[in-house]
Image (cartoon, rainbow, N blue to C red):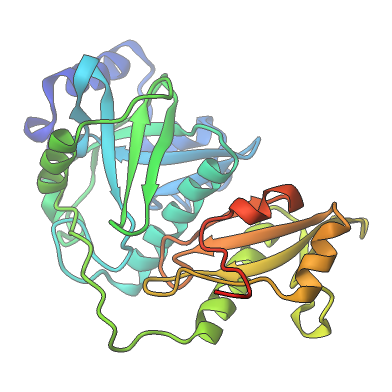
Length: 304
């Protein structure tokens, strides 16, 4: 609701609304390049033409930090809804799709476009009130970006404007309390997943990641080639040979086999692909060239 929005944020929304053409929430995202906007109007994020990510920014949760910088805390837990409580299956899927698109912009080192939205019900009731509807939705002229992604704390920091700035811990804590972002639950040793489960999750994550960009990602892990996934383009040309290593809480270390090291010495297109938090909803990966492998966090020598 408007009264929950910081006055500086509300002023920008009102100016955009008053100076622009009158458009419905569907029109807003359609004009930003979202195909089938009417069918996707209730989503939380969209992939527009030009591989541009668009994400809803609920204005009620925008905080103002040092220098007037806007930021927004994004929960990386798709199971918990705004205001607390378990999400429905549909809400979980929408939350996962949103996180996937935000991560896509992060992996590509690109910003994303935002639609600033206020709502007709208190923000903490947004996902439980059947009468909840958009009050205002405007396209923000300023680019946003994912400034931090912390799978351990299960939060990401979204920042409006130029890169290189992060909110203080005090601002972060206030935003967490204001936005009802749940603290990361401590993970004990009981029920810990096996190495095989972590590796399978990492393989699945990378296969889906590259498939999302239109590439073919073939699982060749059983062939002892020195890599696990071969990524190729639509013409069949090999782009990457990935030796995949998954990590999770309590299982951050990994080793390279003799075959993997031998393949790494042969150079491109071999890469070490480390998937952090492979079992969680906020998995993310990083690729290492053969010359960078020995500095990859978590790599253990065969003598360790």
